[in-house]
Length: 143
Image 1 (tube, rainbow, N blue to C red):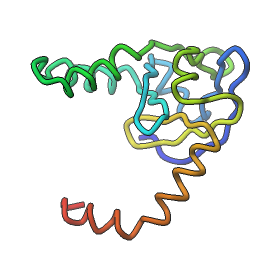
Image 2: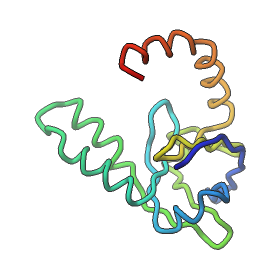
Image 3: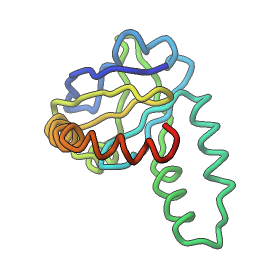
Image 4: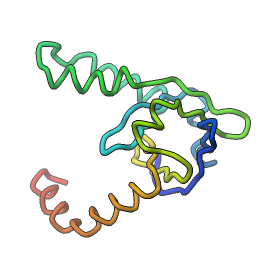
């Protein structure tokens, strides 16, 4: 299970250190892809296979299904954790997420998210401000 918020740096070659507590699970294989809200998603191979199967099963006759599958699947890249616990984030994904130097890695149970630090802080401030309204909406969904 991935949880928490971790500040890291990404170097000019796109190498990003994964929080030490998550490295063992990701060493078995990982996939990074475009995420939502202009961040990147990092999945273990097992979690990625589950999601990819669901995306592949979406009806190709529906434009939004095709668009979402393309966003996630065409943007995906297998990554390996090196001996220093880093993954290489491809340039096209760094550009998509606006990731430059300072990043925040967030744990969201079955995935990690990689955020540009400034974008994360802005997103988090808005979400924290709206937390009561968000909670009420989720309450209606049974959460």
